[in-house]
Image (cartoon, rainbow, N blue to C red; front, side):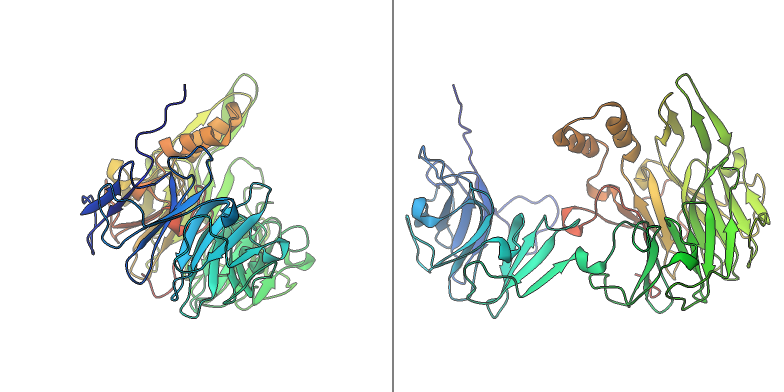
Length: 507
């Protein structure tokens, strides 16, 4: 026997300015409300409440519905109108909005495939036919999940499909039928294929290392200040003469010189302003014996090159063994070819533990993010298990030196940090993968449906202040709590961020 839930949805109302764990000041809830698994809500200029529902209450048809409530409704309030029926054309609704004239717009998923936006006249009720519908291949609707209207009646639709990060399609006032959008915002325009690292110069220009764009071996895309990389790059470093080879790290110094860490363990350097198929002024081979794994790069003010190297491991069916120790290698400005580092920070006192990224402040202090000790499984690989940390070393450090500062502990919320950047005030910004290693184990050893994967990620702590960007005050030490965090579904940040930079003006 099927048991229907006793609560098929409710509307909660909060006082203006509410924040934190506050109780609602009112609610619409109960069997008389007609709520049936709500999926969207909107208010008109009079305060009337419109709710899109996945079903229609008290029927066996399971058709979707839109229920309307008078302004100020509370408790087990009956709707003043219910839009439902075969003539409505409602698909499975995912969002609604109203324009200044009271017309109602509803996104729907069609059972026959495809997507639709239906427009209903003010006062529509019952099995009302839409006054207009936007649907068809030319519309570029692709998994729409939300919509808003501007003051002139143009319609903006958020699509979660259509590119690697979704899109926003814009339709002119009065649009109907199979019409193309008048504008589209999508990551396709950025011309990025597989962004792997990010840096900014002193003028705010954005440099993005792209592992697969360019002549098959990657490129560096350069975007103008304030562009947010949603348009095409203003220029790029790309071509056979550049020496770029699947880049995964990038750094700039105060003079604008560019250093790129490539997948063949070669750092290619370019003078400030370089574009096109430019020949590097230096190509520095790092870790040519492959005993360790370069993971991060930074440039000091004087042109010194800093490289973070992870422990090297090799595994077979029976055991795993370490091929090299974690370290920070420091090279003199202008190093080229097979030049040896002028200093190497390495040893048990350093606190290095699977370093993932590196940054250098204006004083020359060296900041390293560490993902934590390894878990190794024969026949597979070694991956970090956390907890993460940030170790800081004084200028001129060499050998088995202790860090001058270590940020680590439960209050830091560091999990498996993957990137680090400093603003002009030396505040610290950290990309936090939040359980990356545990997810990797899940993928490698127990392939599972998407629901299991997501539940595993959630269990690893991908909510709240745990990231994926944590902000620490300058001078933080020990078990210091972050002073801020950027994370959550509205940010567009995913579970596995790949690069971070902070603008020259600071926060």
